[in-house]
Image 1: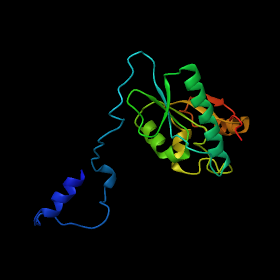
Image 2: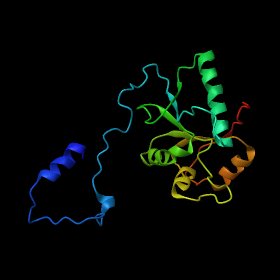
Image 3: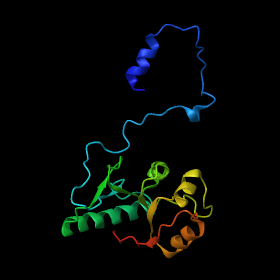
Image 4: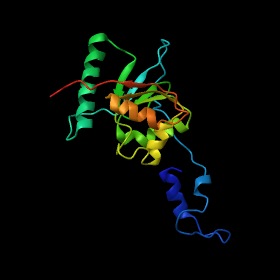
Length: 188
């Protein structure tokens, strides 16, 4: 229901057949949900037969921690490669992913969206920095479990052999994605 629908609800007279109760309905998980957009409606699928890959979640500047600095350095190297080699199938953009594109989720802020994407049966790539908010406690929350078990994941990236072994050890049996080690470039 859009905002105009809520306004219309406020203008209606009380109906004796209906009693309003504040709080979540008992069966809230069965309520119909209408998604206005699953994909970015303004982006057309490619006509040249190539599948577009969209690295979701640009990192605008180095941060105050190792993962953000590593992501910034990797993104900087990828942007340079895209420009120098004229790579037209890879872009770096914020959500939402475009229809017909293969999203590459690599930022922990997008874990929930990536888990939802998998639940829709859509292919994607993940990592680095999607897993192990606490590497001492793998499978710490439902998002991490969903990403480790992701049936529609096509590849998983990590930056070290240690993480590769940890992912392989805790990956679910339905997740057949290869785990690829890709060390971060050094960028002071």
